[in-house]
Image 1: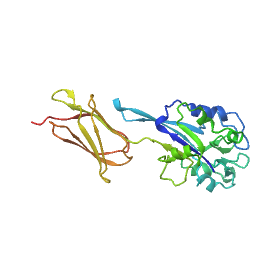
Image 2: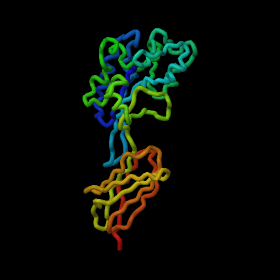
Image 3: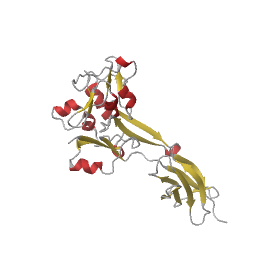
Image 4: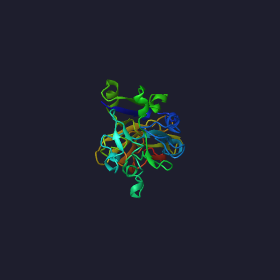
Length: 282
């Protein structure tokens, strides 16, 4: 029975306490045999990534805590030439600080660092070893129920526990990997990861006012799935929960107005249409 972590991005408020707690626990502290001290700068075994999205009045910020995913099929373990990386009995992937030599004998940067699809492994220049999150294995072995990052989270956005625990199993339903395109079976899963949106403001230029209650529809040009919303009292609309890197045909309709097709828009990033003009029928 292993441990899992489920992070609900919708509950994260960007307070950075998880990142600070990781630093507090590991910088300057030797937790051998699980980890040597983390350097004061340069390493983020728990890193809060902030994503500024959209633009203008439609700017939003999403926060995504990232760390080693402690993969079941861990690429770092598969490439380590000295077998310094192992899995503990609770599922944590650990780099043995005594065995690791930073691939110094091979004349290149650590292979584990190159192999990690999450970019979660760091090289300690002073100790010449690779390092990363350990799930605070030293704390778990001493009786703690969770790592420091989960312990300090004020909104309980970070949940940690046994994968067979009913509460954790419920949280895992609908959760997903940060990088689903890489089949590594991670033990860190996410709920409510940021999805792209198309947003804008509908105005009536002749009346010089916004248009409330206009229907805005986005149709996925491949799957034909439709997303629909209405403009609010400010004429603003948000089409949320779209898929990244898809193309959508977007149109606007309102009784008494000529319908308008906004074109085929791509969600490589969030799309903001600050001013969309809608004209009354003659």
